[in-house]
Length: 301
Ligand SMILES: O=C(O)C(=O)C[C@]1(C(=O)O)C=C[C@@H](O)C=C1
Image 1 (cartoon, protein in one colour):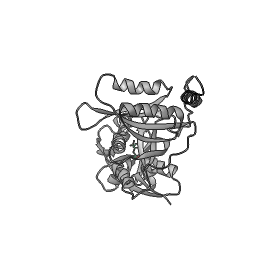
Image 2 (image 1 turned 90 degrees about the horizontal axis):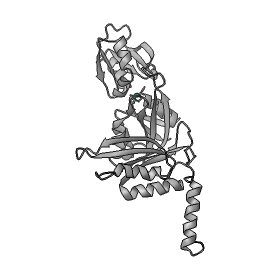
Image 3 (image 1 turned 120 degrees about the vertical axis):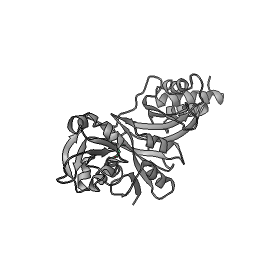
Image 4 (image 1 turned 180 degrees about the horizontal axis):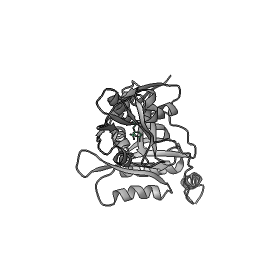
């Protein structure tokens, strides 16, 4: 049985994602994303399930930083969950003066809180489920939690189906130490971190390497390097798998231009097939390489 670390405690959205990505495996909650990633790096777990991006609030910065610092980890699978919340209170618990949740969750229910709990102080907690634990322990009066949290904690639902944006979604990754890659499927995502030197046009040059090979981006984020003010690392997700000739060509070109960290190639949860521009399909790359090889061998011109 595989040992899967996940961003807990029990009752987080990430636990649900871990159950979907690693059914029947041995799941262990960790208090922070960083601790779950460290468990994999140190060999205490075989893989970790962590949130990466939300359709309303964007990326989860602790996950990006946790993947770009420390020993390399690669994503081997992803899943996307619909996100709506339950607001949980102590049974019969009176006035709600404090309401807690993960910052990403709070950002997704701002309007609901203003309309329904206008007098309550909003407090950030380490996860949606840790907010529920805080309500049980009497630290907070209400928690904005994943609907499954009610199964784990002796609390009452003040409201369910809470969300300012009703079709919100979060994408989660299953990450491992580098090893065998998942097979390409034609509907894959590749993720990299690029640290380019700070001079005119470097980001445009990196993106041009992808654009000129007809590779469609699915995400682009910048995070500070944390060493020099104004220096950034770029997190780039794009369609395709590193085992495909056109992606091999792009990765090699990027590697010549910047420090690169490979964060994985894996099937997309939404199963969207890669866009292929005319002249930029894998077969086009294979045929072009075959022509150059023939020229080199003196067998063609
Ligand atoms: O706290 C949780 O339940 C989580 O799994 C984290 C998390 C996030 O980081 O975005 C996951 C999904 C929701 O968007 C809110 C919180």
